[in-house]
Image 1 (cartoon, rainbow, N blue to C red):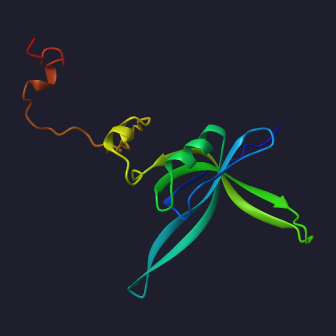
Image 2 (cartoon, rainbow, N blue to C red):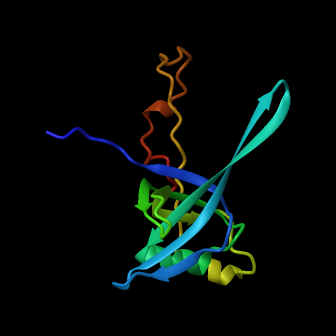
Length: 158
């Protein structure tokens, strides 16, 4: 029996360059682009910032959408998996590179110069609020108001 493992990456940041779309010999679309993520922290009361750069790759329809909708500076949320690619260039030194293979991409800021009409024609994204845990405290011993016995249907005016 194999043990389960998990390879999931979620990032939000800005594109560092315009997407580059290519096609494999078999006709599959491949789009690559860079993403910068910032991290702010304090050292001796002084605010500092580090930037990490990530290589992203999208395939097929997602690749074509990334190429069509994204440009340098666009803020996106992406999710995918971390993978390593190895190759050996002509000079013979074996190379290995980490990249994130995308499963999903959400544009956080609209593409510059896009009218509201074209933005609304893109698929809508629904964001659900995170439920807030309710404390397990006993009900208060206040005087009943009579509203406790009203069903939701009796509350309606029709």
